[in-house]
Amino acid sequence: MSNAYSPVRELNLLKELQDRSPGYYSGGFELRDFGYDPGLAEWLDLKDPHDLEFLDRLIPFAQASTSGSFFALWKCDDREDLATLPVIRFGDEGDLDVVAQGLRELFELLALDSESFDLEGPDEGYYDTEDGHTDGHSAYLEWLEENFGLAPPEDPDSMLDRAEQEYGARFRDWLRQFAPGDWT
Image (cartoon, rainbow, N blue to C red; front, side, top):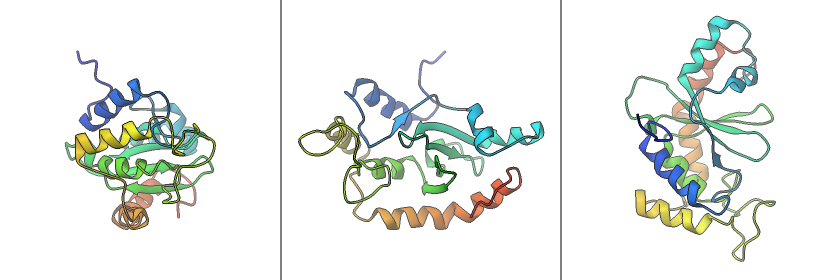
């Protein structure tokens, strides 16, 4: 039996980095238990036990902020490479966003060291280092380059827009079948 964090190679590599990191490596982001989360049914206000089976298509894997937002992969189809699934951010205030077309795009966004993926730099309230980034940020940037040849995106807004255009409407249409709410 494998001791791997998940069946996703990219996440396993990130978990290795996280386990040796002195603290946050991207503002508010932290891997958590991979897979089913009973809190997801509550977040989506699901009451009918028959609707709960659709949750198998959502795979929570990380906190997105210190205030309760989290990331999940959406199994929008039956592709085998889970790392290429779209990444959904479930916000702590009820917001819902498709933020990346796959894990590698998310990893690029995490390189901004900001919960909001803002080019202005890291959010306030994390670890105060000399360079104004989280404690593990420089190690994360090295990891990102070494493992994937990636760096922070020059235009995160267009990356976020592409993910939303590719999957946003489709995800919300799928979600409306099971979960009440105004998913605009």
